[in-house]
Length: 48
Image (cartoon, rainbow, N blue to C red; front, side):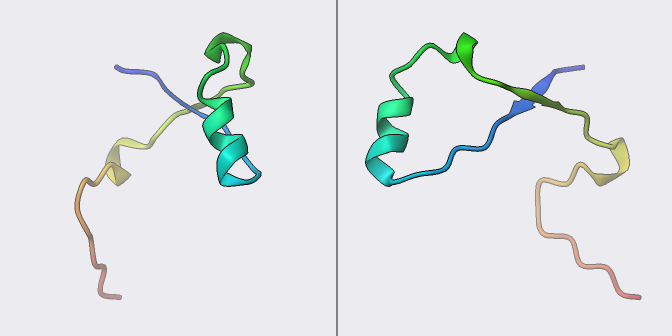
């Protein structure tokens, strides 16, 4: 299965654009492990 990683990026728009030019290997990435039952690619409405 494919591995998915995520990181938080806070700041101004310009600082975020500057971040895009740095080395991604130095980023503190967190692996996301999605649950198979919740992997929707469209809007899902649950009636309860």
